[in-house]
Image (cartoon, rainbow, N blue to C red; front, top):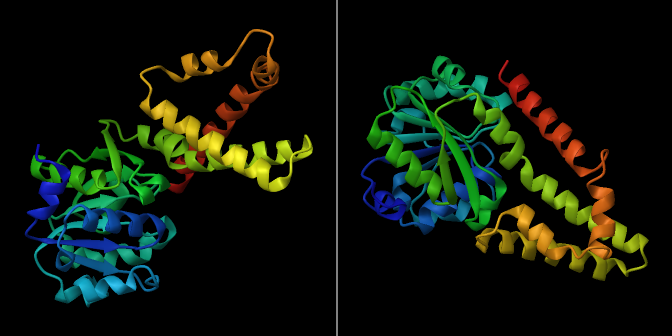
Length: 275
């Protein structure tokens, strides 16, 4: 498989980005940073952000008439799921057998095919894509060609790592773990800071300690060959302060059952969105 950057640099068709919000915009910035010719990008969004508008001067086309778009290599669906029923049919005329990559939560391959057609890949990225550190899980419909799969991989890999699964049913759980997961981590930092303030720390210092601890620990986890459980044990001295805290967090009613319920709730909601 060609590298992501070379695949983007040699692309001879157009990439249509339907929806250029936080995630769609992050993907667009990743493509351009990876060498995609701006003139190959068409953005369709009625509310183009101030971050995206200046890209028009570099060649990105903003909101042309759909009938004016030709030679489409891929359509990226980054609209809100509740908007797709209205937006999707307007795109059918330019789709045909074109690759359609959806990052809409809860919207199934079958639902996308019915609404706008195309050769469909369903993907779930997460917000660290904005800094090139996202992770995306993707599943392809059976009629997606290898070249279309390779192009999808290149487009998604521009914002981080990519994993492929064969079973679409796994995407709901992926959404709950990695798609929604950054919010859990941010909540951890938020609550660590709050607890630090309750323990007597100045608010600014408590937040700095929480932020740096969470981000630094995440980077250690990323770079280390050790698994998370081993890294946790390496911090924990028997009878020490960490052990005292973990005795609360790892109690029968502690972090594990709480997070299990949270991820189950997010998974269930993802399934509901598909109805």
